[in-house]
Length: 366
Image (cartoon, rainbow, N blue to C red; front, side):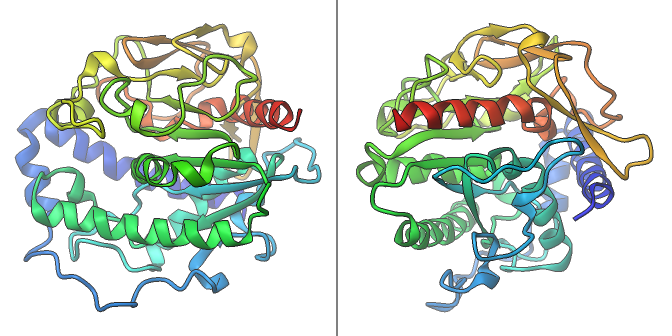
């Protein structure tokens, strides 16, 4: 799939989100709730009506799907044989319609965007192993604006698909095969739940989990997930998590409601307890200069190519947020209010993530 389609679709998707975010700043959350909340209540689908993960059509990427989105590489990056890891990736929210609480398994617009975002994010791991990326009945955007029974049921349905896909993934992964997990935004939320539910199955096999674009509370969540935060670049069986902002950051759009909820340890979450692992250094709470970043995805001038530029973007952890610095590339007017680089959580550090996964996999093998 060409870089042009990826970049255009990402721009359109980001623009929609930006408009919504500015609406929150101007009018409060009520305007978004009114525009994005589906009419009526959540209705449970018929039993056994979800995706059949034994079939290739229920996956965006898996090893037997030729030329799938996760195999994409930026211009100039040499393709190598995949490593021995089995990789499970969960895409973020792409369904922005208000006609239902959960997206169909495949819908033309969001389905195409799922492909494109998988291309830009999951591809960072394709040197470490073969990638499995499920389609799932993702919760609609409104599920993140409301604390209601409908919203919770929509998220539960989405997770039930992810969990079923993970069960299928485990059937195919060798009993001693190393596993890498990754997700972004809604995908990261489901990944947190997956880690908590499958601790026993992942013990001794987890290379690393990349829980990106969703907060993890160090006290209220992390102890229940069966894996610690990564504190060294060659540590295995650990979790990397970050939310990217410019300086000065204003994360209240994300954290205002989150910090009122209870975590997996039944403690109230706090914004002062958010896990930040720097993807450049691979260590918790650290700083890394631009020279340490192995590559940021940069679109070509005519949007037909994407290249990887190393050594231009640095970052440091500050109060649980990952703050970018250095010579930031021109990403367009799509950074969210509050200096929020959420859409670019992977793109800014694509090369660093790739290197991190390779390094941890090598450590796991030895």
